[in-house]
Image (cartoon, rainbow, N blue to C red; front, top):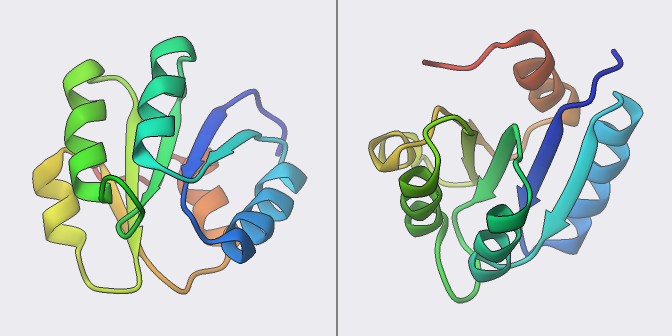
Length: 120
């Protein structure tokens, strides 16, 4: 897989960030990471991401609130929520396109992005 998809991962877990960085970079995605919702909103004002992957539990703003705010700014960006808890309905109701329950392997996320295996 080789593509120019811009992916933003929003999570405050350094271990998961390293796993996803390695995994998604190896599939050729252009990946950016940030640790807070506020940082993600600021970044999304300046960069047009194709995909935003959002964890639920983060400092300053949870993933549901971030999803709502990002969706207000863009109907085009594909948002995927993620959490160890079953919060899929909450993410979808907030405007996410899909949901991944942790733990998951980076391959699953890469296939969702590259293969278009996203709920619409």
